[in-house]
Image 1 (tube, rainbow, N blue to C red):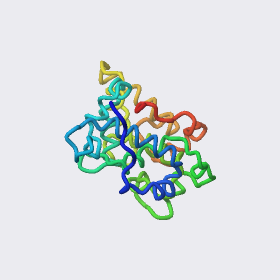
Image 2 (image 1 turned 45 degrees about the vertical axis):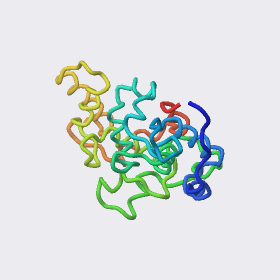
Image 3 (image 1 turned 90 degrees about the vertical axis):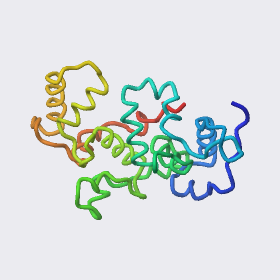
Image 4 (image 1 turned 180 degrees about the horizontal axis):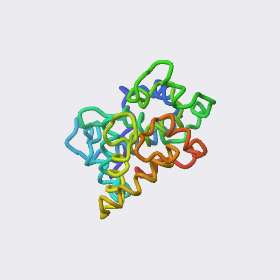
Length: 221
C-alpha cells in the first residue's frame, strides 16, 4: 500500500493518551491501521479521505466473514461515529475499548457498569451510554450489551435474542429461534423467559468472565 503517513499535527496524541490510557506506541499503531483501511486515494492531497466508512470495514477479511458484521457496523457507527463516518479520533475511541492499555489506567479498580451510572442516570437507555470514567471492562460490557439490544431500548428481550440468532445462524425457523431465545433469557432472569434483561442483570451474570483477556479485538488486524 506504500508508505504510511505520519500522524497529522492536528491530532493531539497527548490528549488521546490522557483520555484513553493508550500509549503513544499504541496510538501510532492505530494510526497505521486507520491509514491502511482508508482506501480512497481522492482525499485531501495526502492520499486518504481522513475517515472510514462501512465499506472500509467490510473490506477486512475477518470482519466480512463475521455473520454479525452488519450488526457490528451499525453499533460501531451509531455509538462512535457520526453521519456514517469514523474519524481517527472516533476510531481510537472505539478501538480503545478492546486494546489492552500499556499504561495501566484502565486496569484500576472501578465501580461496576451499573454502579458507575446509577448516580447520574435513571433510565435503561442512559445506563448503557459510554461515560468518560468507564474502565475498559465496563466499556466492553456495554458494547456487548448494545450488540444484543437490537431495538435499542436499554433492555435485552426474547425478540432481541431471536434477531441475533437469525443473524448468526442464518437458516433457522422462527420456532427454533424462539425456543433458544427463551432459554437464553431464562439464564439471565432465573427462568423467566418472557422477562427482559437490564445492564445490571447482564453484568451480574457475566461477571466471572475476564473481558480484558477474552475480548481483544482482532477483526481489524
